[in-house]
Image (cartoon, rainbow over all chains, first blue to last red; front, side, top):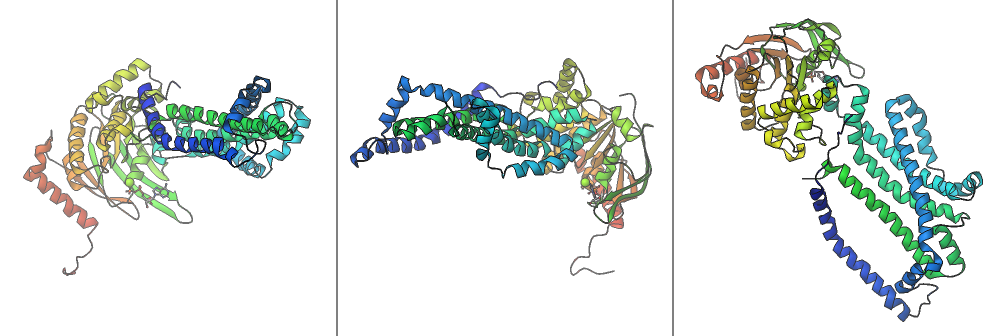
Length: 267
Length: 268
Ligand SMILES: Nc1ncnc2c1ncn2[C@@H]1O[C@H](COP(=O)(O)OP(=O)(O)O)[C@@H](O)[C@H]1O
Ligand SMILES: [Mg+2]
């Protein structure tokens, strides 16, 4: 199928970003206030740095080359993102299978739901046993976390049948493949992105929690080790980096969504 | 398209299995439609008008009876690109521009890009939307969206056009304009048209024949020819002949579907 998804011009897309940036101002102010309180309020109350370090202490620790924060961020990002990609691909492809084979959905969907009651985090030691103590078990956890929201949302989007549209396409004699590419895939995109955005946040959390189970690198490892040695400023640096990683991934997806799902915006 | 295409409907019965009790949407309907005729279908809601169009378009299979579209059954007629629909809602793909929506059937038929573009441009022009070729449906008014739907239905020059209350969701002024335009476009084709409407004035203005359907079970109860001269333009709407024709249709309707007695009126 040739290009069914045309794009709005870049300028229009950029204009769309302007609005959220304005409302962003108030929230940024709150953030700066909190930073100021932590920087000057907390030491004034006599709270020691190993309980609650100031932002400047956290920042200088984050930039300390000996701590190699960037390296650990890279490890976690690699685990989280590769798990995210595999998990969302798996979730989407299974959703496609479900839509094309109802009996398969009837047989597998309940198990997909039941699998969600398994605390994936509790599987971490088991996955380490199976895959070795490297990146793989953490990526697997991230994938498991991503899989379900993508599966559920994609299935919903692919199934969203409007009788009139189906009638129209059938009246043109559209076959299943044409129906899939001209109707189901585009109409599924908004739902897919809902799933992806949930999945992205969970994938980073999954990778870090996976690292808690005895990893030798990554933000989860850094958090475990730094709390053990009461290097609380490093803990905070790692936690902040983890948040930024999650936010970064989310923002990338948001931008991608705005680009691909342009027709959902009120014009 | 090669010449007008006649339609023969013979003993058409359509039953829907809705839960325990089946619904008889159409019962033993027979009708002969000459090629190039403009037919208006009138009747209370639920009398099977949409079902009749869906059966003609091959979207629902007859329980009994036979349909021939230029000698072909509905499935073969569809495969031969003889039949095209316009629904009450425009049913445009929101991620496609007006041009891409109009090209949709051509893309599904596997036409080459240059051929698609040429045809789409021609029909965008015909419905007066050349300037809005690259607009998305959300940027178009309801009337303009329905023009796109009309252009999309016409773009492969079908021999049979099935319109199911096509302008029913639009305001009266827009509807009147689109009806005039529809006639203008139709007169340039030899298409056989079935047009479902709730408006007797619309039926009188557009059609060569008005078919009245009744419900429970859905059946044909009257077949009224309209002899108003063509070409018909907006001026006709104020003409006495037109008003008499509408009055005649109303008498016909009341005979088969009498209005409930008015409060304080005489009861017969
Ligand atoms: N898909 C369907 N399943 C079951 N019953 C249907 C279906 N479509 C229509 N019907 C019933 O068939 C009858 C005729 O419907 P329809 O053809 O839509 O009438 P109209 O278009 O004249 O309002 C109605 O009683 C309606 O409820
Ligand atoms: Mg109807």
